[in-house]
Image (spheres, rainbow, N blue to C red):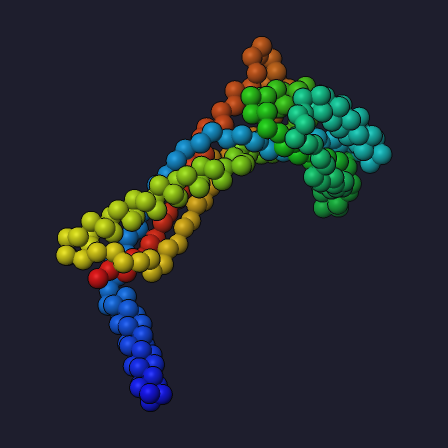
Length: 237
């Protein structure tokens, strides 16, 4: 009796082992790979403005004092526009001597240039022009860069990837059906969602005459493109 039970147990183990191997072989027999991608355009909801204040004088102390006076006015004026999630900070401060060469090729000190670079990050996209115009009116003389971006875009990515995954599964199903097969499982799936920032407007030296017009400096944030991709493989039999 015990021998029968042992044989039955042994047979059962062999059967399970063969079934598992069969399943593995079945899965390893073939698979279908599909790729699906999509792009979506969204509006930016954050801007980063880099402004610099440059002053110069033969006296380093005078150049620094002039710069400090203008910078204080710029900071004070821009802070009035900031929202609760916005901020302004000093990004760089430099003092550089400028030398010139005389006719007899002697290098002499001409002046000192003091530069204070300020970065403003704001979610008030509609006020970007005002930030720039006010900074210039208070004495800033360079807008080095302006970058638009999107934050909290995960929801758009997630919904886009979900749609692409369904699309990939449907496509794989049609391919499998065309060869009298059917999907029996997922082999692998890779998902990617990237945010491609809009082109960055660039501003060089900006003279105060830019304020002569009654209207604000025209600024367009454009749109930001989100690229999503699904690369999936499905087992078929």
